[in-house]
Length: 286
Image (cartoon, rainbow, N blue to C red; front, side, top):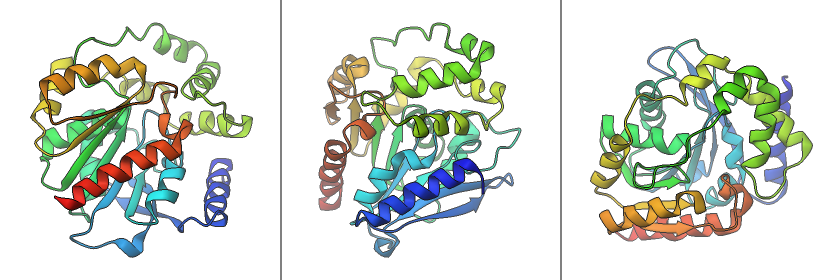
């Protein structure tokens, strides 16, 4: 058993021991032959007309980052969290690190579901928007974008030397990244395992995920055109974008987390889960 797999299993055992619903690991095979792994909770709530929740993590992150959401939502909803290709326990192919292919992976992940609240964090939010752009919103009951640019003004600050530093010292740069995205420090074991998991993917493939060839207006058009309920959950870095999106798309629900890090759902899980539960109940009442 790999060290990361062992760590993942420990987290799932912890979830079960805390009285949360059972979390299991499953897999699917994509149309281009890649095995994708995902975590599932609340399978007993699955049903064609019932609301399901699907979670897409950010750049280099594994599905287990959503553990506290799986525990909570799985008590009332069929809930799944994807390990995107090259991440977590999914295969690490040499191809497919494009917005189009990753959006297609999301489509195939959602294929068994028909009434989905899709939640994407960071890069996962961008890829969820690309999914909507390519395949439409019919399968979705609603969409949640978590702390990611949506193409509104103001544009995020330039990425600086992050990609260069990854090339020069990947281990150190990833370690710094895993620490800075949390406002509440994580254990050394969790940090080191997140770094180890991020290094599964080839360096150049991981960099491709940071260089999708779209202008910012591409994401703005998709977001503004989305006709179903939309919740935008942000930290201060995207709060101004959220206000502009609300101005240009008045039906948008905006929820700022002023004291959390980029991984706000891990820093303030109880509040985040309550926000999602409230939004989900509104979807069910439609």
